[in-house]
Image (cartoon, rainbow, N blue to C red; front, side, top):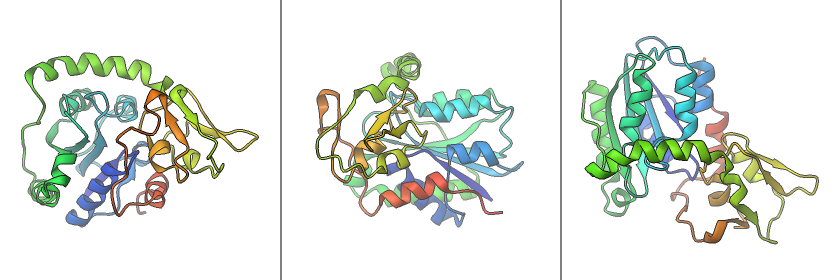
Length: 250
């Protein structure tokens, strides 16, 4: 049996996690927080799916791993989604896992090019077969320069990412629907007395609020609405909310 754990903001990692769950014949993916509460059983397969931020995994994922006494899974796999270069995201994750007694048996990168060039489903099928058969594999990275710089850049990102919320601002088109607060995977957004969102200092830079705002009222720094953070086709905000609330079957 496999437990699929997913962190997702814009939805691309959730799409991958759901397709893996379907291919493996496993229950729907659970969030990182749900994994921390429920954990995998001894000997179970663990599949971690996440986006690449600053050439590494989301801070929440490595923080949760570091809080655990041990990883009980028999085999651990990982899939990282990346808009550009993945840096050393899989190697960095492997380092955190090793400190908790686990080893990343195999890992893959899914990029936007895989979708544009119709390689996406081919790669999903390759992953499903490899995980089912328990194959070991190399951890893909980037160039030697990126692989050398990634850990340093990632540590800096983890120190500063919490304050990312200060860079969000609202346009007058905000309808006070509250979807951004409900979607935030770390509950970093609260609604003020006027119903408008307020960002705290525990941001993960996942851009869920930015990507899913139905009024497109959320701006980010000087980028405004120009960030490349469009949700994948076929996924809805309700799917992200379901991931946040998903628990393991009893």
